[in-house]
Image (cartoon, rainbow, N blue to C red; front, side):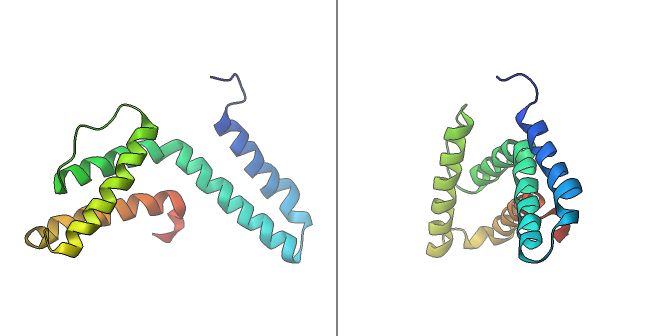
Length: 125
């Protein structure tokens, strides 16, 4: 663990600098790319704040649909398991194995999509 400033504080400082000090003096292509950078920094900050909770919730939704073990303790391992579980879910959907549970499957997928959009683009809602 590092002392202050924390990674989250550094991200916020970078966003503040870009938005308040840099962006007002820019025009054209460089201004556009700075706006893109601000969006990227915002995504990174929201991931920093909420990704682990969202991935853990996604794993639990996946467990309700397909057979999965208890979630691993390590977040890195959990991410890997979620990717594999999503591939398995897609395979089962293609095979028709969840046709009798389509409402439940659709609800789980909608919730996962909503959580991902909250991180990627909260203004979408």
